Image 1: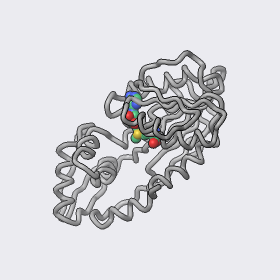
Image 2: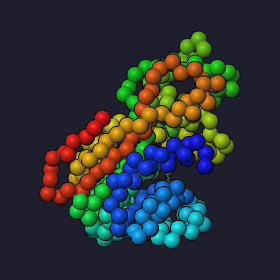
Image 3: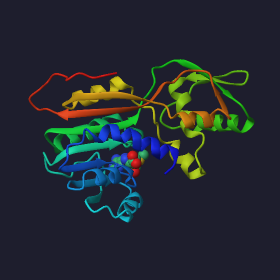
Length: 268
Ligand SMILES: C[S@@+](CC[C@H](N)C(=O)[O-])C[C@H]1O[C@@H](n2cnc3c(N)ncnc32)[C@H](O)[C@@H]1O
């Protein structure tokens, strides 16, 4: 397991304690990293892993997790009867829904989760967190990284990247700066092309909370997680970062309480 996976597993521990065992669904399960954690922790639960990618689901099958059922489907289309599950999860899948299908489909995904959860069922969300807008500077330390940035500004599809050239770098909005930082190191051309279609930093904490409440959830926990320190240090050989960006991820624990309209309270 690499450092990133170790960190992800540690973060998941903070979420897994909120899981209601019984019937569990992960929407956008990928190759099954989260399913594996859930399967070990809840051996008596029935766990459904849903993803649109058959390649990813084949990886899930190869893990041979006894209580996991993989299903190929779009998580923005409902296929389950109402009130089926005790817990539902979106871990790293909503930014892809936003990127490829748009904001309304993110709302649809929350609505579907609400519908398929039993009363008092739990929805767990973990994804990237958009920073509050501010203008920041990136110092690009070599020619290769400068070329990479120009490609990013030209090819990034989700929004127009506006920047001003500076002596040794660029000035731009912090969301675009962290977007570039999170993508510039793509391991292959194919990976880069895919990343150019996806925005990681699409929702701020308030945006997530608003969609959750509008779709009928009560917020039990709303926690911001820091940037991955080791990754940040790696980057500094290519890019000098001249600003503070403390938070990079969000975790939400939401409850379907049909009778209650008010919020249980959220922690920053
Ligand atoms: C970044 S991966 C996260 C995988 C897993 N949850 C994890 O944390 O390891 C996001 C996954 O969501 C899936 N996904 C994105 N949009 C989807 C959609 N509309 N329907 C089904 N799956 C989707 C992708 O295929 C991908 O496997």
